[in-house]
Length: 517
Image (cartoon, rainbow, N blue to C red; front, side, top):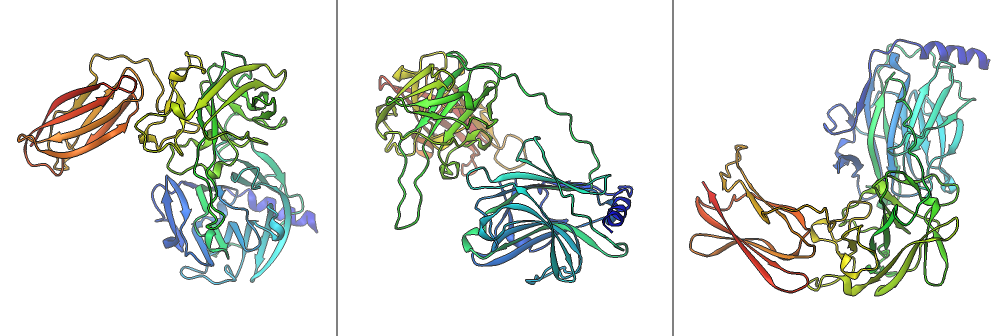
């Protein structure tokens, strides 16, 4: 009987593809139907924005059932799914519901993958729905855990062998792990003449899960071969020149047990100063008590890319949302050292022989003197060619980046760029009428050292202060400000800039004309 089922499935899967698409949601939800009002765009990703109470959300998009062959879903769950808070990824569903939704949706024929079981298990499960009755066909491996990561992709292929093959991978990676559902033979039967869709279905009973489902893209029907494997970069054993301390956040806002707010996460960032990848499991932090804190488990394959950054933190989810964060470079080690909120010493060493590669002494006094408060503000290394033990080589992260840049290039990095013009105003004549021509001016700068505090104001021809763009704000050495001038009448204005030197306390003043027409 099983052989006959697989033969039917194989015949169905070899139909010629005549429809395919990949939707990353950048064009909105015009092609989708369902509870579209309960989804929103967030930083180029699709996020659930449902009711802040128990609810059900779904999105469906019609497909050519004869093109049934391949799907991909990229998703992120910011919680541990369960039997009451779960996600269904529909490969196909007989599309009879256009508006509204009921608990037994869909009521007819469907095939879907579910993530969320009783007891908090998170295995892939393949289900078939026939006339409102769900049947578990097969169970695969775990793709999600609260400690192992919450962002992943699934690729489902109706293969030439007649089996469904399901692959999982980390978000943004191509290290697909194959999971063959050998017992998932399906007698598809007569599907022609009906309308089918693919899509996703969200069910949550816990109100705080209403915005915790995120999707990067969904693709359907593609028959393109897998990309050629990207050669793994050469991995080298780190030495004193190849790996550097880059940034540290050691003083953060504490949580509150009464309000349920968790403490923000501290982090230590390192920089790969070489042209070879460095495996994180070859590195460890060490405190003066000689206790080692490996940056990754011994069997974990995670690398710091050449000339790349890696921020190590105990809990990536508790990094402040105000920071400029490069999430692909955030890593959670097996354990993280306790960092004193005032000062301390951290060593970076090899796990193989505990050779110390760099020493970092940090102190709250390294922060800029004008900062009103230093909680939640990291200190960044200015120059990797200057030793990490030099206090002047560390500086508070700039306000423009949210006071920290975990996993990203430092806001206070010294790019060794020199220029004769400290500030540039381009253009010096603007016409703020929204016609796309000279609607705004760009005030850019390139300073020789880090840590200047800047005040930038606009004065009219009577000497009156009409606009303040920056007020005693610590700025990055290379940055810019965009000014539209929409609130100014036609006339000649003066851009006034005052810099406070971070070490001497001396002030430098600059004036530039600005014409508004």
